[in-house]
Image (cartoon, rainbow over all chains, first blue to last red; front, side, top):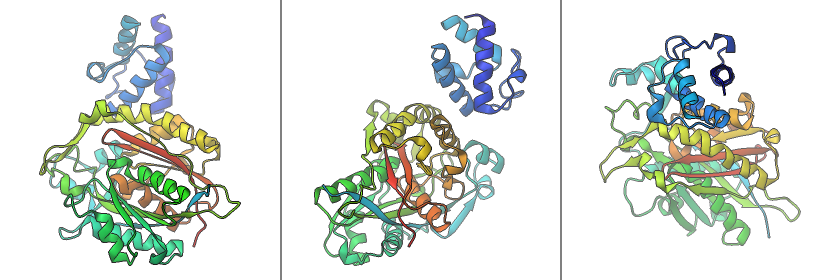
Length: 79
Length: 318
């Protein structure tokens, strides 16, 4: 999987869970400050990402993933 | 084998309303945060001298009235509760006596927030097997007795109340109105929601419970639909345990059930553990939001961790 593929898959997930239009999901976007996504939605996103990419994101790692790029990197590194 | 069906619902909420603004005066929180995080606008708190049995009795009386049965026609009373004041005597025998139910079978059932669906499953089984003719099933909780009011992660969520239904036999050619229960537990995660010791307060790993509820519970609800022979499209009311509006909406989304069919009683009731589902059903019935004769999907989940789900046929409006 390329980073671009992960990013667009993630954007789809975020659009479904948080309602944020996919084109607003840029790599540098901060979940809390830019996308208004709180820790409960992050759990939903992590679970959907596991279904889509086959990579588990446990709660203890989730809190360190502040931007979209952080999640892309995590998935890329662990896939 | 005879079938079983629900004859009527009843519910009770204590008088005292506690709003988010009230809570913001005693812990560091605010209305907007509570609404967005949990979905609650207000909840009810029982009086100090108001007991689980008092609330169970009030809801039970209303369910009996809605069912059209006399108390003497009931021969089993089950109270789902995880917050009785004392371990014995049980709540069920006391409530049965107060309601004028004559010497019924009487037991309390503790499956925490999954209690009502567990109790409904056992009530249906009892009627179908001939162990009882009419069963009064009550979920009643005084969760606020077990809350640390300085802990803003729990005191904003839990509340008091009761809900009830009456289960009776179906007629000779009538299909059963309570589907097979799908139940289970995850004891390996028992530590995620606990009350420690006799005077301890309820604590939970909220994020872990959110993750569990939104991933493990949708398949359970789907299985309950499958065993009842209905598809999720046919469900006219989805009534999950009112744990947290974000959990409710996430589960509904995964099941593909439209938001306008989803119970959101938590908004003005809080999380009342095993009372939440029957309380929601009784209020939806009062508001004319339930379509008689159509299937509703119930799914309960919580401490244990335990869960149970079944499809019910909604009763006629009295």
